[in-house]
Image (cartoon, rainbow, N blue to C red; front, side, top):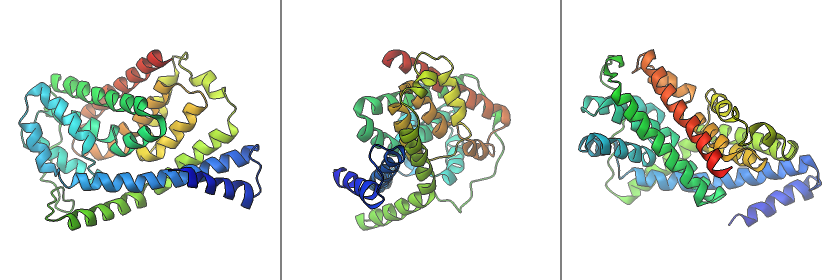
Length: 319
């Protein structure tokens, strides 16, 4: 399926621009052109499909499903629904308030909040296509486990008193959508896809650009020397580096691909990607409106420990 894109990248890099396939610049540019075309094509198709699926599961339905479950199964259902419900950033606060106001336990709500950004369904499908089913399963299973355990831990601490008192959610960001026909669902999916691509394309290109530089200029084995499975500090360092970065998961995957290719351990790259998507500073600022600082730090600390544990575990299992 991607063969025509590789032909195009080869022609632009080696024929039109005259770069040598053996040169570092030629390899880096070829990687950038091919991955840019491939990832944007995948993004458009996957986001459109996910948006159509989203029209069948509005936020109210999610709350009803989670509220009807027992405590333990509620965590599992909340984490599972977090994977398949890609709610936008502006709906995070009203959705959180809706969960709390509906009487859903705080820990169960946090299982949803952890899973929703961390296990990005677009990233999951892209990982499946780029790395295979094994890596995609590791990504989904570890993120799901972190979400459930983080919710259980926060629920056990009884931290409801650390929520900020807020008024009802703003009407400017609707999280309730109803569709009467396939034409309406497709129209919504087209607009959703367009909006997402307009928002994430700079981060995707930055991620691909960094990945291309690593692919072309970083010597084979150099990163493995410092970020291989035998270095204990690699996983916590990767998690810490990922926190201040602001990127959609699709923008991180090209970088993950390049790091893995250069010998960085899989657990380390997964810890980096989960940190970028699940512990970002923008999420911290948004959630600060509904949580006191102590609750935010507890939340981020538990999730961070879960991410690092996952990185260490898979470095051991796959090292």
